[in-house]
Length: 137
Image (cartoon, rainbow, N blue to C red; front, side, top):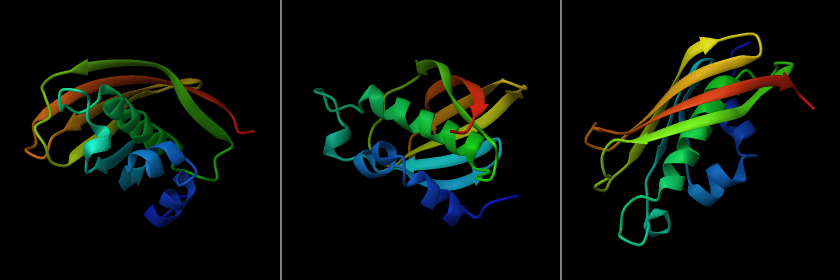
């Protein structure tokens, strides 16, 4: 069953850190693909005025979670098992967009490529996330 974007957003409101503390917004949610955005403000900056690395990580992890777990009636949940983050260029202001796309979907393990883009469309970071599938509690 495909859930509406409103249903997915409502479910992921439970991820308080991503949605409330950080302010990430789900723009698109499909099994194997998602798009999330953030309008950074002062709380997202590091000491030299750049975007804190943890912001990229939170966005990537959240985009992955949305893409992999947006079928809300599933008997399983997928959690992050490992992450590799590669910073490609500095953020220079404006909205940040993360796209998550499945590369491999196995029985117990999946692999996603997540990309972070600046408002100018230039790629800021490439993040590879391995997920582990387990039964819902």
